[in-house]
Image (cartoon, rainbow, N blue to C red; front, side, top):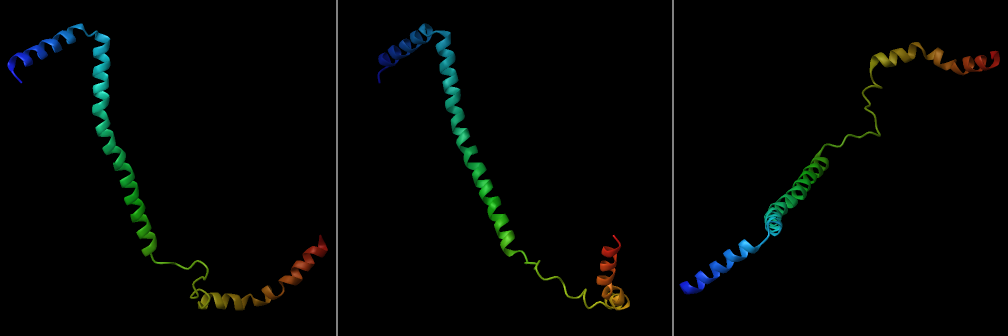
Length: 109
């Protein structure tokens, strides 16, 4: 462009700036600010789902590779303990007569 065209365009812009009301300038500034903020929001929108997906993958791997403990079958070493076997032998007569004591309690009441 030649300098006369550039000068004419500058003059037109300056004239438009002076003729524009303050309300319109405020709305233009707000629109510019809003447009600039939209670029930052897309980065934040992508960050949270990526973090959530990564966390879910870590939890899934931890669950899949953790040792499995059987809840259905209790440990058998307790039944073979000498203390519990002696205790049950000493009180075997009492356990054997529990049905009788239960019947006796029902009859008395």
